Amino acid sequence: QVQLVESGGGLVQAGGSLRLSCAASGTIFSINGMGWYRQAPGKQRELVATLTFGRDTNYADSVKGRFTISRDNAKNTVYLQMDSLKPEDTGVYYCHAVMVQGGTNRRLEVWGQGTQVTVSS
Image 1 (cartoon, one colour):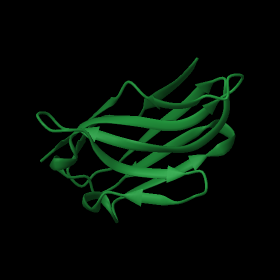
Image 2 (tube, rainbow, N blue to C red):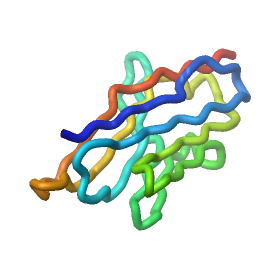
Image 3 (cartoon, rainbow, N blue to C red):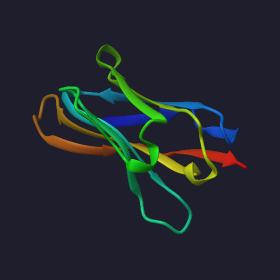
Image 4 (tube, rainbow, N blue to C red):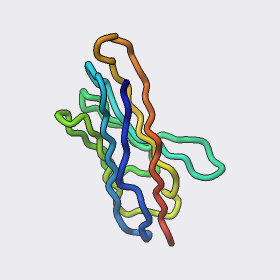
């Protein structure tokens, strides 16, 4: 069984910073990429940032220049550093990973449980 565990959400004032972490655990053969998505109340889930383990990054236009995605391969962990936060960044942030499961060699897409980020004005 493979799971993603997120941490680091919370309440912050506009202009502040937060750092989210997402650790993958379980029987993992390899991780192709990890990323962050978010869902605001009444809106669809949207991509925030992704990182392939070939080091290609992709950011939503709304967060470019403010958010940075990075990884620690040894820990199977991806981070999202969020600076200059705005009230419109408020939402539940979900970690996502595409990986190959150890033992079965099955390709899996896994989601975390989500962590709340609230930015007050």
